[in-house]
Length: 544
Image (cartoon, rainbow, N blue to C red; front, side, top):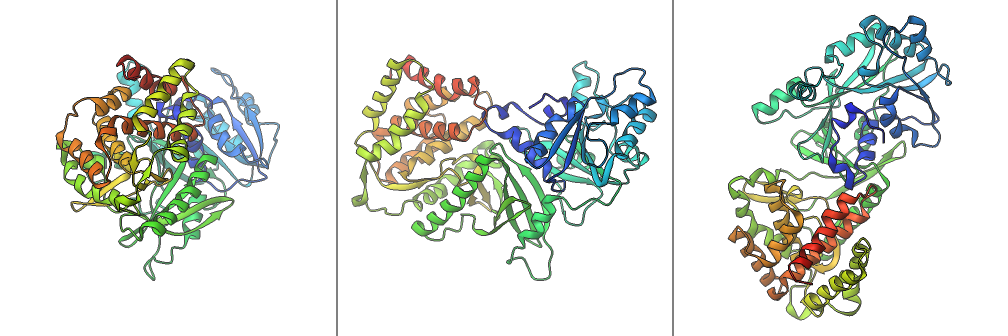
């Protein structure tokens, strides 16, 4: 991907361990029409990231065009800059942010007019730009840097209309504080298919009202705009359970680090999730997700805290799955003052329900093929990143000593039982989402270990992952109620707690194996944090 200042403002370092950047681009594609067998032109360096989202379709033809040099750009140079090898009949013109436009209102309007004149009858322009009064611009100013050239929401509309692009849609594009969630919402005009929920707190409402934390996605044409893909997906979803006579509307549209877009659809007081995979990995994960939920219902019955698949479909080759929404708030909302502790007994019961056979006589021994499946195979995947053959052998020996022969009741393990996937409402656990990585016939307490690691890492972004694993495995845990939760889970699932250290590192092994499979853009930093530092910590502590 190209480095583009306006795009990096809503991207984050989290992209390095996912195909998250690809998902960002594809999410923006959802708020435009579908382009196939289309003529696309990418103007300047700053539009290349957007271009990647549309040029991936083999039927589209992509042309590139540099921007005119500055200063002193003449009218002839501006007109030449709008002329491309594509000539006229451009279906989609991907523009750079205003920092690359010709300086001055008259010159930038002239350039936009030249681009507009070369569009096909239903052609569009699309670009992402900073909000003049947004927090990104404020950070530039506070750090002593000149804010990037930008306009207000109203000024973008004025400039485009002056160029003959009278039909305009403006969207806010926002990255949350974790860097993992990118959301899009309409700014202007207010479309009938959207009913965006207003934030609860006054600070969030101010940011929402003035679009302070967002960049601006601009879509414009001289002809009426075709409904975007996300609206057509909403209409195609046609949830049969929606209240008769009511209309489905979009409350939220966002993507996560795992390459999936989520459309929250509402009808009166009921909500559904339209899950839209944006990458190949996400497509595979969505299939696994549906299969896993079917399997859980088959083995464990209908659990009220699970999402339920309502249907599926596609729009222009983009697949989607419709499921019931989980009410409530994610667990991070109650971590302050350790209010999450009240939910731990309920979570024990939730995890117990994922054990199809609870009689101790149904225990399996972690040996033979079972050991190969749960330990040896993921260990081979993870240790390929450790160059020292002797160290690899010592790690393998550690797992053999710690876990071989362990008795356990086969359970369905969520695989990502972290705070962001657990929802609470009215003092109850209302649901658990994101079952893509669930493992069958695995070891139930691994989810409990996952939860405690997730809570600890969420408490402070400065927590060291390897050190946190080691503390849970071998040292006193800082919150006694959390450790009691885990001890109770061992008892409920008839597991010998003496295997606790090995189970902590088996959780690490499974989580890291999943991370490696889900990652397109693996970097040295990720290998170091999630593999090498963990192995070195065990080695330096004399545990290998």
